Length: 172
Ligand SMILES: CC(C)(COP(=O)(O)OP(=O)(O)OC[C@H]1O[C@@H](n2cnc3c(N)ncnc32)[C@H](O)[C@@H]1OP(=O)(O)O)[C@@H](O)C(=O)NCCC(=O)NCCS
Image (cartoon, rainbow, N blue to C red; front, side, top):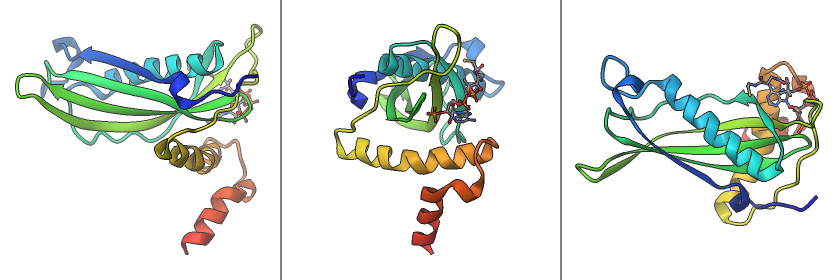
């Protein structure tokens, strides 16, 4: 399988916040944003593996700044690391008010997708070679985030998370 770069999966999505997307305070609802983020992440994952994918998990999302009715939402997604059948996708989200020409960061998150074969079973994905310093930093951190989410998802015993343990040992 051909090794891919994060640029190969780069996905940019733009939406406008309409009345039906907001809560009673006129802010974009978190669930609607997560829906758009899920689509952007799925497109990035499919660009990487050229196969159908499903969302396996979504890491903790904190909403740093609310996005107002009428503002534009920018979502950028790209694969940070590929494992065996799964891929981690990093998303960054900004809001933009064109009337005041103000662009602000809203949040960021990591999604994990698994590629499926025609029988709906997990299938191998191409490996990823990071290019820029930011991509290398995300690539290195992906191993720790993977072990943490597998422990929280009940898919890994804490004692088996050697890389994560080494990180904590190093910090103490
Ligand atoms: C995600 C799913 C395919 C994993 O299937 P599974 O039978 O658990 O398969 P495996 O245990 O072999 O795991 C397959 C991969 O998923 C990863 N995975 C499983 N659970 C995970 C979780 N909670 N978080 C992150 N990754 C997970 C595994 O680490 C493995 O990755 P790897 O091959 O790169 O090491 C399966 O649980 C599923 O279909 N879930 C429903 C998906 C869905 O409906 N999503 C919403 C709509 S798209």
